[in-house]
Each structure stands twice: as structure tokens, then as C-alpha cells.
Image (cartoon, rainbow, N blue to C red; front, side, top):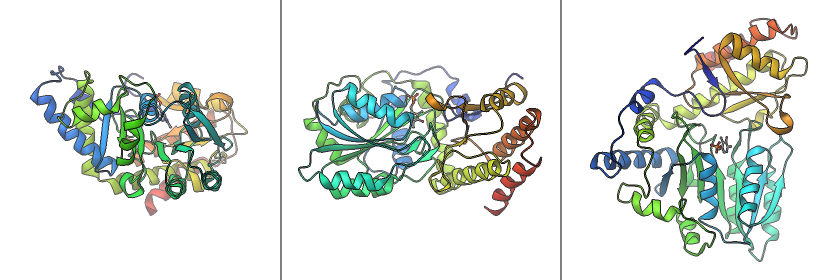
Length: 384
Ligand SMILES: *Cc1c(COP(=O)(O)O)cnc(C)c1O
């Protein structure tokens, strides 16, 4: 049915009506005082969201553009970096680093498993010559629904003393506590179509003082994504190049909504959505792909064994207008993923689980008691 679509993928995520309406306006000049006012407010609120007093820079790119900026501004050709890879987005970090001629050491874990912080500790401790210039990881690995232990890995990076930590928080920022200043995270990348409740089109990079030191001597080529330019102009409430002005109208409103809800409530809501979804999936007898202790706050991956993942997605879309994500690469056809990031409420989960139950019935799957998934989710909400 037209206009009934429910996006439950890990980006783009649902956008509130007040954000859409804010964007449905004629653009204004980006060198105007009016735009500067918006830019000043948005920048302030982005710092609040990132829990940092340092810079948060807005770029006209998708999340991958923010990742690329996070590498090229702080490193030089041949620099040794240690990259965590346990999924599609860890792999992307490896690809970007290699594209720019860095020397890439990789710590891997199977897709669906968490990166082992102990392996980072060992490699970092062995590096007494301090040749590792950066440790680069994905916090919430969207391809599998695994949340990596950023806090512990970062502690080992701090013990090393020289390496920067560069993090993809694309599906954890605005969903999970990432206290950038308290943890001393150096470079943190994210994108608008994920936790921000706005459409795709903006990338964000938070940069700390140690990273700006590295910026001074970093020799990788940079022009459009030269963060020094963005920093200089942000200080004057402007941008070096034409920003997507209407995206800023929407972002301004989305950040108002976030401030009204409060960080703790936002994190608690995502935790509740995650727990309810996982409890429901378990009650339906469907195997979860990621372990409970390392569950992403943004996405729940399910690996059904007695019913076809793609058929589930197809019925959910055709009959119930609910879009779930499929698996990527070798997980294509093997898993489906339920997004619960950003503008998602308890009711959305109840709706999605009820539709999932109806879909399973239609597909002739008999491994569950009808109503048990909804009941399990409802129990989580009742006790939250
Ligand atoms: C969505 C996503 C990205 C960025 O993807 P783009 O398509 O470039 O916006 C990066 N990392 C993770 C973990 C993501 O989920």
C-alpha cells in the first residue's frame, strides 16, 4: 500500500514527519547569516550528541566518505595501521586503508563473532618500537549485528600511547553510549541516515586534539575531505563548500528531538528495542546470529534454519509493507536483519514481530506458538 512503508533496515532509517517538513522548504544561501545561525546551533548540538568539547565536522558524503576522511587526514603513505575486521564494514576499513597505501595489519573474527580485545592488546604490547600509527575498528558491525568492545580495545590503544584510535560508529552513535572525550577517542565517523533520524547525505567526523596534532604532519593526499578546511570554517559557522542546506534544516529539528528525549533515554530505548526483538526472535524458535553479550543496539540478525530468509523478507514486504535487510556477501540468503535504529518506537517492534509471526504462518513454519513472539517482546517492554 502506498505510504505504508515501514523501513526496518539499518539505514536509511525512518525519518520523523517534522524533520521531513523542515526539509520541504526553499534552500537559503549558505553564506547567509540565517544559515550561519543554523550551522552554529547544529554544531553545538552535534557536540552534545558526540559527548565532546572538540570538533564535530559535517561533510556532504555518505558514511564511507566520513570513514575515508577519518583516515586520510591523520596518516601518511606506508604508515602501519591495525584494523579490526569481523564483517562487511571492517572489511571496508581494510579496503580504504589499502587504497591509500597504508601498511595494514588485520585482526579478524568470524562474521557473527566479536573482535577479541586480547588480540589487540598482544599486538599493541609487542609494538615497543611504536610503529603502529592507528588502530581502526567498527563499533557496531552492521553486516552481522555484532557490537565490538570499543571501550576495552581503546584502553589497550591508550596503553600503547602512540597510536590513534579511529572508529566507525555509524550504527552506534545516537543509539549506544560512546563518550568520546571521557574515553579519549581520537577520530569518530558516522552518517546521517543511521542514528540521526535524517535522510542520507551527511557524514560526520569528530576529531580530538591528538588527531589534530597528527593532522599537521599527515601526508596522504586530501582536498575535498581536508578536515582542516572544515574546522577553520566551522569556527566561523560556515562550510568550505556548498553544504546540503535542506539537510541542515532537517538535522536541526532531529537534534532538537534528540535533546528533548535526552541521551540516557535514547540509549535506554535502543537497549529495550534490542532486547525485545531478541526475546521475540528466540520465542519464535529462530536462531540469532550474534551473541547476547555483543548485540548491536541498531540491528538484530536472524539465521533461520527451517524457513528461507529471503522468503520471509519477501512476504514481509509484499503483504505487510515492512522492509527488512538481507545478508551481505556470503550471508546473502542465509540471514535477515531487523533494523531498530533511530526513529523507532516500542510499537514498531510489536508491529514487526506480529507481522513476522503472520509471515512464518503463511510460509508453513510450525516451530512456534502463534503470539509467543509478541508476548516475549511485550514482556520486555512491561519490565523495562
Ligand atoms: C551504513 C554504514 C556505513 C556507511 O555506509 P554508506 O553507505 O557509505 O553510508 C559505514 N559503516 C557502518 C557500520 C554502516 O552501518
